[in-house]
Amino acid sequence: PPASNRRSLVSKLPNEIVTEILKYLVEDGSHHIGPVLFVDKRFYTLVVSTPSLWCNIHIQINEMFEESNKLSVQYINSCLKYSQTTSLNIALDMHHIPVDVSIYQQNRGEGSQQDSDEDSNFHISPRRKVENLVEAITGIAGIHMCRWKSFKYLAPDRELQISEALWNLFRYPTPALETFELGGYASDDTDEFGVAFPALGGVRQLVLPGGDIFMKSSFSYHLLTTLTIEEFMDGTLLDILAGCTQLRELILPFINSACPSRDISFPSLRILSLGGYIDSLSNITLHTPPLESLTLICPPRESFPTMPARSVLWRLNRLNSSCSTEEFLQRLLAEIGGIEELTVDFTGPENSIPAVHEIVSQRDADTAPSLRIVRIFRGDMQLDIIRVTEK
Image 1 (cartoon, helix red, strand yellow):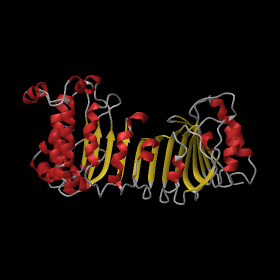
Image 2 (cartoon, one colour; image 1 turned 120 degrees about the vertical axis):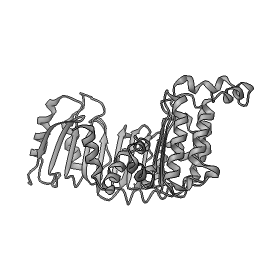
Image 3 (cartoon, helix red, strand yellow; image 1 turned 90 degrees about the vertical axis):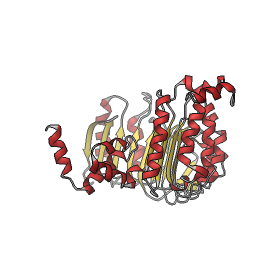
């Protein structure tokens, strides 16, 4: 329909429905609500009087660093004003800062006359621009940090000169912070970040690029319910994880460390995802309640920890033709009790599908008696689905 008719239809919607639509638009932070202010007077009044539309502050600094920085500070100030006392979700994405911006600070001494001249001409150094953002997000003496509910920081993947300003983010307490996510760092760039963790005492959900940050900090991990460590490099980290008695979701996408032989209990665990060299866990006995979901990202040759799980996803992360897919599936069905749903994500040839059918149909009555459905995928494409009849 013509634009005038579309506007007429929208004008007939009650404010409650319009508000819910706008919440959906901004909930992931990829869009901000500012442009909606200019639709008409009704939308302006509705938007500025609804704090929940302003609580997601997502800043992405990219190759348009000069322009985006000024707009970002204005955007932050608007969000802080109109969100009133609502909890805030902060995301600061600096991953795509170009190299020439990252090394800018190396070629200029801090506090030099040259920097002063540039400041007066509105050509502010990248580090100072980051400091402006930090000051806007935190407020004077960290006044806004008491409202932070989640914080996600994706760091530059190169020179970290400008990141020093970000260590100051956690000089002040964040009593309402529940989710903290850190990404973009190389494992040897994280030494300084451990000092921030004491301020994160109430965090329930934690995402880290490597376990070394976790181990070097004095962070209180006992309240964690969700933990993701992108690169698991130190088997002794399990000694710390064993104290996470409230942990419900543990995601270790890349395990690259041998672990000492021991028993570990996760009394609250419901979701477990393991990837990389799962053989590294062969000496570990995990005690968990029946899992809602177990994900194994490994080739057929890997061993895996056994535990009951209702839903299992096996994804081959690399093809190894010398290993038997059939043998692995037989072990999977035999050793993991309580499976109701099995998803197999193949990267190999499709001729493995008949083998899956045969293994599922010819298993004995004591093997995976609860199994009801098997899905076979390649990436996002579903190749087949097997509905299992009770034996």
